[in-house]
Structures are given as C-alpha cells and as structure tokens.
Length: 334
Image 1: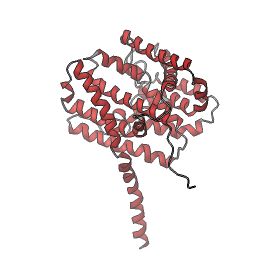
Image 2: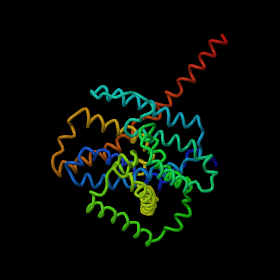
Image 3: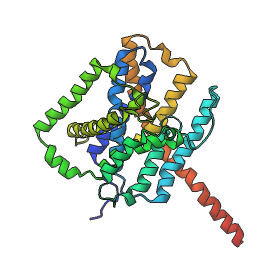
Image 4: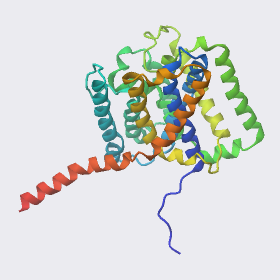
C-alpha cells in the first residue's frame, strides 16, 4: 500500500491557532473604538492577556526544524517585503514615516521575534534552567528603555519565556492530566473570572503594559513594573493551559483557519491601518447595532484573508536570486 507524504495536521493546534488569530484581528480592529464603546476596551484588554503569549507558546512547540536558510525564506523575506509595503502605504496616505529594517511596522515585530527565537532555541535548549533564565530576562528587559524600538528587542525578550514553555511542552502528558471534567470546569471559571474582573476593574489595566513594548519607566511603573511583568507571565501561562483544556481536539468548521494564520496575521494589519488612517470608513460605526455588525465583518475578513496566496508570492521572490545566480553561471561558462 502506497503511503501518503501529505503532512497530517493536528486539529487541536489548528483550532487553537484559529481562535488566536481571530483574537488578534478583532483586538486590532477594536483599537479604533476603545474610546467610543466600553465593551471594545474590555474585550481588547481581555484578548491582550493571552493572545501574544499563546501564539508564542504554539510557535515554540512547532520550532523543531530551525534551518537558517529556511528561517530567512519563511520569516525574514516576508518581513522585508511587508516592511516595504507598509512604507509605501503609509507614505501613500500622507503619513511621514522613515523606512528602516530595524523598526518593524505594526504587527511585523512578531516575524523578527520568531526569527530570533527559532535561531537561538536549539543552542539555548542545552541550558538546564532555560525557562527560569528566560523569565528573569523577560523581567529585566523592562528596565532598559533603549530596547523598545530596536528590532522590538523588548518584546522579543519579554515573550521569549512563552516560546520556551511551548518548546518544552509535552502534549501527551498534558492530555492525560487534563482530560477530565474538573479541569474543564476550572479552566472555564478562570477565563470567566478574568473577564468579569476586567469588566469591573478595566481601569487597572493598560494595553502598553500587556504588550511589553515599553520600559517600566516609560509606563510610569519604575518601581512596580517588574512585579507586574512576573505576575503577567505566571497568569498568562495559566490562561494558555486553561484555553488548551477547552479547545476542541476534533475538526470543526473553523479548523482550516489555523492553517493560514500567517496570511491573516500579515494582511489584516495592512487592511486595518489603511482603513483607520487613510479613510473614514470605520467612522460610520455609530451605536451598538453598528458595532455588532462591525465585529461580524471583521471576523469574516479574517476568514477571507485565508485565500490570499502569500506563500506562493514570496517563494517566487526568494527564487529570484537563485535564478540570477544560475543565469550568471551559464553566461560565465558560455
């Protein structure tokens, strides 16, 4: 019997990634209305408690083949391409921005983070206490304000513990331990309690604190920022596991979305920035009914962006140097 070489996907992780990418898209599109609708602010804070940590966690779990050339092709090439596209778009709509590869536009910092994390994870995995060391590094980076803008180093270091957690994650053991009603109930209570707490005390949280981009001093937390960062890491890790307990393990109608998270991640940022900065389209949302329709449209957009053939585009781009080199060799030999 002939064996198929087609890669078998894990529906659990595809379902998890589908949920996260929807949270990413919704979270960014909610930013335009945080001052108009209180629910927008609450949902955005809630999402930021876990979506970046969880994506970092899953990225770490799948970081098994870290070939340098492949990392350049799959991460650095898309980063450069979209950095150029963002620059063209910003200047086209009248925003004065400087082009540089060292300061990622909008969501592109995560591509650099993935490149750095996957580049260092194999040698660092030999360290016996990598996870606690990465947590210490995450806490300490907040004391250095100069690290926020340079290749988003602050966030790269701050979220690295979650990448390490994912790299060390034992899914079989996790399934054995958590496959009971008690864990499911506890997970639901934890997630619901967080939402209720944010609803009642949303003034205690700020998005810049949760996205770890700025130093403690810039955030006005010079003395207490390190403690909140440590508590955030511990709590976000619990949220990652709690969501994992509740995520379906079988295929669902939205499972396919998990296969195309990179496409959605890269493209939705361009759509949002263009609509929010270059047009007045989002300003037509006026009232609760409009807001609900807006959220539905944003979710539909996330699914629609699955069909943008990005991988084929940058595979073509990365093949250009090889073709030029081949032609140069042919001319030289001729």
